[in-house]
Image (cartoon, rainbow, N blue to C red):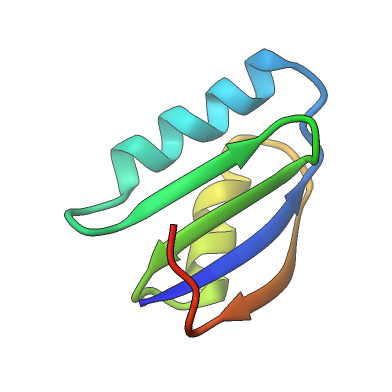
Length: 75
């Protein structure tokens, strides 16, 4: 599984909470994520495509920008 990194326009705990709720509902067994409000980043370890994950994260209503994919990283 790869780790996809995104910049998400999160400004408060409510924003990061919304991202966390969406990812908790959408991700399956073996998939992991890390939401960092201070850095305004979200990392997702998944076999799904970067575009699919961007669409899922964007459901929180915040601007979401794909940054990178690391095929050898893990969370």
